[in-house]
Length: 300
Image (tube, rainbow, N blue to C red):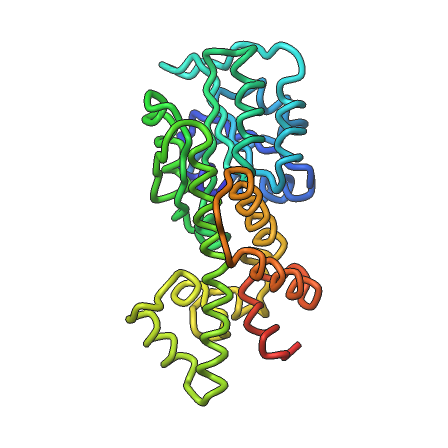
């Protein structure tokens, strides 16, 4: 994501990066800071607070709700200076791309709105995984005020292909949790279907082509097929390294189920899927969640 921002922003812009892993930010600056074609100047911010003070647009991506609360508390600790001059925009824009629960997001939004009523906070979780982040083809699901959409879309379009406004703040996260609840289950079903067909003698490539031109087609069968060699560039080709880790899938499934329980929404398959991913994580560790296929086959 930061790579795409760096190359697509104007050379008049400065991209400030901060991560708890200082080695990662240093490596990013060393690899991309002076590369051509020209783009934004890249600098390392010493803290999330420093990055906020020096920016008119702040983008956060964090693993867990507790991390989001902690980082925004640090960013907002004490009065912030006026945003740097940014043409027509006098408001500081906060875009949180983390996948968390809507309740936590609303707490963060209030922590900004109360002291800075003119600033804008939106939830913009994304879909597309590591592959989409690198290629700049992510889909962003927004909970945002209508009057902020042109500014927000201009920023997110530098990192993705699709920007969907689902409603007011919180709506983006609701959409993401619904989507990833489906993904958690469809991935397991895809792994089971591919295992069934190949165990009964079908060629994996032929089976995948059949599924992907039939009613069983889904992202897990077409883009992230769990059988090595079927989907070009998928984690299955790299021993399931990289991609969307089992632990992240478990987190999103947990958040979706908690939201359903809080709203008294009936769901029936989530608990079984949760049990499957618990077992897979114990057996396979942090690999991409398509490793369910190998777990089913008992190949490790």
